[in-house]
Length: 265
Image 1: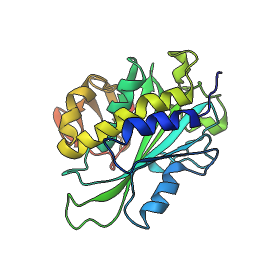
Image 2: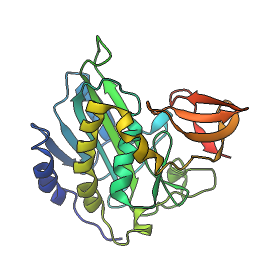
Image 3: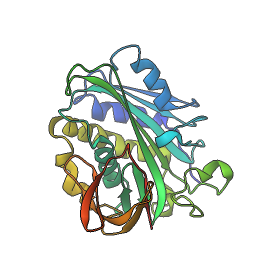
């Protein structure tokens, strides 16, 4: 597997982003417990200045619902984007992030609601969005940390990597399967400028600006799904605020990301 220093991407990313995001900085570290954990530590001390924190390797990466996300230098891309936002509605931010990433990664990348990147039916990456700060009103500024983990090489099927599998017994996917020779540094430079632009678009217009783009890559649409509470139905897209719509017993029901997880039947 070809490797390249992530540091070589820092200057180009900074130059591409800083005109639209004054004060933006890029930090690249060889190893850290979790880029999200570090930026959330900072966010609890005060509003975040815009920053991209990238790790060659994470030792205690975190996914949704407390799941682990482990990484090895050169084999995966792990980073967190931190900034202060005041969107009129926070709902659907992780979906908008997924849309932005998928469009830059590959035409075959799909989105499994609410925060997974899929490649050929297997988990390629994940997204973890966290916020900090007390908001007096719904659209008051808050610090937000957007964590991203993407497999560059297809991870070894070990107990450590099992937590990243999409389904039991299904191995995770890697970008090198469809983009031979691609490096973490190349992927970082590819996705970050567009991600910043799309996060700013979300802040102005909410998820509605991404609904059609999400629909084009929706991995669950018209598929039978089983919800974690035992209900079964057919996924039928997402609402304008990003909630999943599931046809259950002849009625369309909303499913919010903090209520259930979804697996295809």
